[in-house]
Length: 555
Image 1 (tube, rainbow, N blue to C red):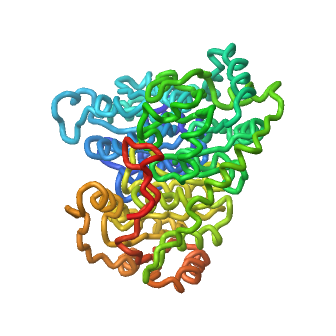
Image 2 (cartoon, one colour):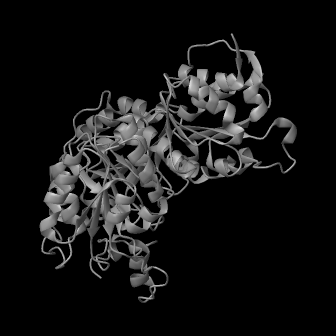
Image 3 (tube, helix red, strand yellow):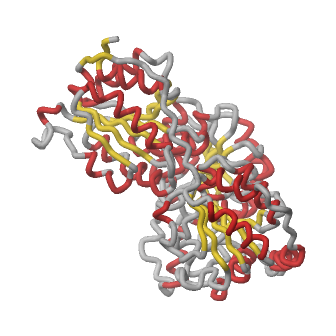
């Protein structure tokens, strides 16, 4: 059938099983948006307040479903406004396709109005980027983008489509969408070697990363951990790969992990990294990290092998296939003394009480959220102290129910991510845990939540300061609080009202449970302003470049 390029974009989206896209129209994308109007019975378009919000929404949609998120924008600033979203998705391996408009092909390279070379701008933060200069190439390019986004180590792909390409016509022939090839184990002979290492280990541990969730391998991973009887220490991105209530789930690892996860890392004799990249927030001192242990890396991306930490053995392939192969023929392992020792470490700081405070404490607020939400409900976060408190105190029982910017640390990510997740899962509830600093960055997306009546519960940990940076200034800069006490007078309850959203406030401990329950019961978007102390800190903390031996437990 003879179709315009804009219609081909819509047909390809339908062909790929896309039912929801996020975006913002503009001149160079007018043809595409005209086609979306005609396809509105098949493709649901969510209009955000800003393109950055749209990119984070596509990310949140992808993280919470495993599907490819789609963002559509116009040229120039419309395209550059999604760069942060693409970078966020790229470092966390989130499958996305961005479709941007551009000036007509005869105007490319002339500094035309709202022209930008977005294809080259995003090359460092995408798996691939394409400029389509002929309508005949459009369908194949889009199909290639969707395959690439999900192939191997997942990530974002951008397709830039000039306006005349969306107007021109060509024959379109629908095809069955091509699935990514199965990423087979590249060195299967190493499976037996790793199995022998597991059999010989007396104190094994698993360092679990986001690759387990990306590879849809949570069930296989939990079975593997149980079979080898190894404690599981999760990176921020790995939380949820094994239920928080599982006896082998020890918790978050790294800079703000528990004392017990640090001790496990320092005293294990076998460390198995599953879909993790040994980032600086986990392996502070990379020379000493796990130096006493044999280290095995299970990884899909060959570039990650030995990149940050030297390993003794590795298996390269799809994480699900690796875990199945390792489990086959391996008998049940048991390490009762090792597990008992870890139980002792868990209680090392039992004598430390919660700090005395006239303010509600973040720990108490998150405990109330744990009690109110269902296991299948979703928590999205921004970045800062509140993000680390979520990692420490939120009970993540199901995979793909924690959405957070791990590698990029993008303040302002959470609003868009919450929108994307709530659109993907109308049957679930989404909690956005944010801080007043992060919330200020993308609070304009409150209008999106209201416009689509998305029942997100927004919990603002409002300490009136830029808490995480301020905490570092306490520790490392002799209390010189440069630009971390901004004296903003924003009334978040009044602000919510300006957007037509309910606003509630927690000012004392007695407010926590009834106010959060009220927010949940409203079943519509609501902002909860939680007035916490500016002096509450995220502890314990291993300073950058240090080890568990230098852990900070009080300030």
